[in-house]
Length: 240
Ligand SMILES: [Zn+2]
Ligand SMILES: [Zn+2]
Image (cartoon, rainbow, N blue to C red):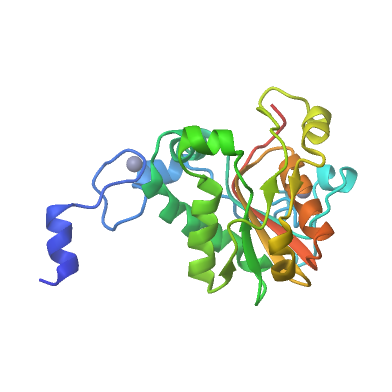
């Protein structure tokens, strides 16, 4: 028995969602897998929203991305913010389940395959320092670090910073979310040289209206980034 086998006897692998016994580490049991809405098939190339129809290899866009200004190039998300997808995101966000970051990053890596480019700089959306203080860690930075490592890309956790508090976006309309976030982000002077002419992969846990990604993308482009693509763990279907 190798070290791996010995460890599995001590700590039998459990489903990361319901703790039922599973065959291998960092996975979901069959029931939780079925209840987790992973995104597959044809998606909007800019926001990752599932679209009806077959993937014909052409760039497809959803209605929102055709009508809302999206300053970034391409985007993907691993799962829909529904059913067990929502449970997993909330557990990672508020429940101090940092162990969920590893499987979540692996799912995001798979979703990101079509949009990854060699030499990309991986950057998380920052948490406001007040919330960082209360929550103790930025789950977006946790995910972006793991994704950068798995993809063999450079990670820059502090490329984007919040210039002011934006409060809670929950319960705001789409227009209010965009207005609230406009100009909220900046790039520290000390990070501009590292960003210049780089393709950036911007990472967050949840994409709702896209207002946060849009505001952070604008800060990155203003600082000299060549392009920005976005990657979320979960995509919210409609504005709440
Ligand atoms: Zn389970
Ligand atoms: Zn879209």
